[in-house]
Image (tube, rainbow, N blue to C red; front, side, top):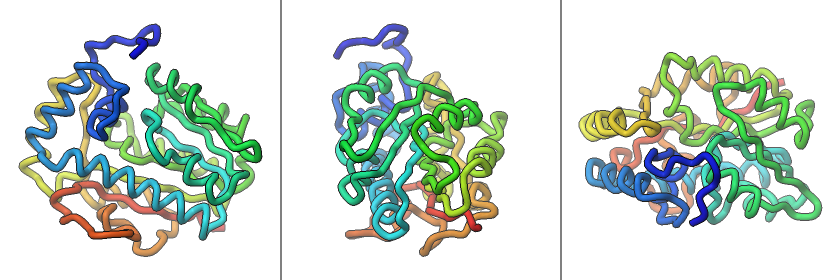
Amino acid sequence: MVVPDGVDQSRPSPARVYDALLGGKDHYEADRQVAEALVGILPSMRLVAVQNRAFLGRAVKYLTGEAGVRQFLDIGTGLPTQDNVHDVAQRIAPSSRIVYVDNDPVVLAHARALLTSTPEGATDYVDADLRDPAAILERAARTLDLDEPVALLLVAILHFLPDGDDPHAVVAELVDALAPGSYLVLSHGTPEADPRGVDAADEYTRKAPGTEVTPRPAEEVARFFDGLVPVEPGVGYITAWRPEGPVPPPDKVGLYGGVARKPS
C-alpha cells in the first residue's frame, strides 16, 4: 500500500484498526497488531465492527427510503469499504449528497479515489477534526444545503473523544447548526455489556497512543440525543435497532446508539 505523506506507520489509527477488524487491506502492521490484541482481549471485537457497519447501513436505508433525507454528513467515516453511505443512499435516491469527514491521511487518499457519486448527486471529503465543529460545518456547506434537513452520522467516533474534549458540547454545536427535520445517527462504546472485557481493552488502548477510547454508560450516550425525538425503537444496543436478521447477545456487541430527529 502506498504510504501518503505525513503518515507514521508505527502509530495506529482508529480508522485503520477498524479496517483491520473488518478484514480490509488498507492498514499497517501497527494497526493490525492493535486489532489482533483487541480480539485477544475481547473475542467479539470483529463482530462489533461488523454489527456497527450493519447498523450504519440500516440507518441510512431508513433515512433515505422512509424519512426522505437526501443529505448526509458522515463524521469519522473511516476507510471506504462495501456499502459506504453514498452507496446505500444513492441506490435508493441517486440525487443524495454526502460529505465525508475524517482527519487520517490514509482515509483522505482512499476517499478521493473511491468515494465517487452518481451523476445526479454529489460526494465530497472534508479533512477536519471532530473537535472543530465550526470548520466542519463551514466546509460541508460547500456541498450540503444546511437550511434543509441533513442526517448527521457519528458512528463509533465519539468514544475517541475524552471527557476533557466535552463531546456532548461538540454534538450539540453540530445539531444546533442543522435545520429542523434533520437527524442524528450515533453509536458509542459502553462498558455495561462486558465490564471486565472493556476494562481490559481500555487498559490496553491507553498504551497504544491514537487508539484510546472512553466508553460511556447508557445515560451518557442518551444525553447526546437531548432535545431530539428518537426513532423507534429508541436508543439502546445497536443490534436491536430495526434488525434485519438474528440479533447477537448484548454482551457480544457493546455499542449503544440510535437515530433521532430534530423537531420543528
